[in-house]
Image (cartoon, rainbow, N blue to C red; front, top):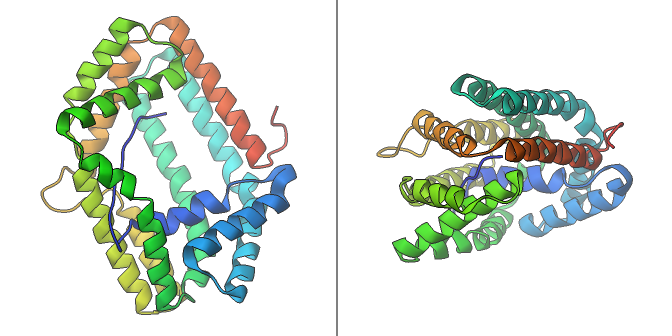
Length: 290
């Protein structure tokens, strides 16, 4: 729903990557494709971490548990979030209902993160140093695009960012008019560019996680390491804007974008929201998905 950006770098990598590697890979396919999905997710995780046979078996069991429990863990929270967003779209977005949506997203993400961490921690606690090194290298390859983008001239980066925003908005609203696109591009051009701050924060956090894992502290400590990194993921360190300020700017941006839209585009957003909700429910194997 929000246009957003991110970044990172070598031999270090965002905790969210150690963690979200599990989150996105493990919860990828369910329902009729559950067995195929479990094998695929296990293989992807195994490739990143160079898991041995015993670790692969443990991972496959963890993935299957995640898939099996997805409806129970997520259905009610997803339904509440979609209903809240839909109501806000119809009545009009404002600071108050955006804060409610933000809190619901936080609760949902924390629930998912805790769920994945509980499954991942026992396996990550068994990683050998060479496996941790391998995972860092594999994850680092996925950061190259961000580094390449940071190396572009400022004017080119602004143009890229403008086009990505327009595309992200149109994905929800349908076609935008030329005046709407012009207004969005002007707004985006004036936004602070914090990609380098995010990159440095991700590098630092991954280094902390990797160093922590290399201490082989045991499952409870690994769980704490991952959870603390997850909860502090928006803290980018000294001389950067606080998470609260960045979130406030994000709400301001969404309110600006929403204010540009006509009734037909807002209706398109509502339909798109329900389409995505239905797709997610089918992926999670939730009964009643149409």
